[in-house]
Image (cartoon, rainbow, N blue to C red):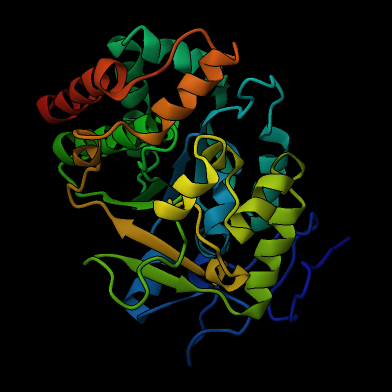
Length: 332
């Protein structure tokens, strides 16, 4: 039987499992404008690009898709997830992400939770360039075979090394497509731990802003709060609490140097989703003078004997980043 989404206004069709059966190009759009209950892009050209071209989402961990849930509903992308999200707990989050994907009518990609986090961490610590380059090549082959129109994926923010390398792998795979297939593949990222509405009305060229109306916003919230492994993290993100960040600073330090990831965030901030065009943009310059957050957090985790060694930008990630980028630029 058909099961409507929460707060559904009755303007779309539903398949037998409850997912929306409206053709992708018609989602959120009519001849007279945007349909209530769907995210809306700033211009009709942006909306057409998001819905008419086959899209792929590539993320490091299950659950990242919730940050761009409105876009998922519009694009119904193929979704690649590098790890199972098990972290040090050993508990996979894949089943919860499968549920989200089914609800929006998206489909899993060829790489879907293939690795545990520990496997990726070990590859970083070994500086196993061949391991990551093989991953780049496989992703590029998948993108080429499926004739994807654009790619959306994790941003590199210095928060988690797997997020950051996921972004570098995406960029290299896109570069291989651009050079090898002779066609430009639009490449976007989205913030994972920063405020989702950080840009306001001033945003970089090529950035697409989606604004969720009440029905789309309620669906996003309902799915976020229904994701059992991330329930506490979702609540923390909504009020700016970051326990892992707070644990590294005293109260006076937190007052003197407020962290951009620990800002009080109105729940309405999550009505906005930004897809930011890469256009050669990188974030490594931010780590040349000060170590990224994941190094400080890693030191604490090693002290607690959760891990045996700290993953560091200069020692581990930078050599991998340079090798991966060189591979993407050199192969034709």
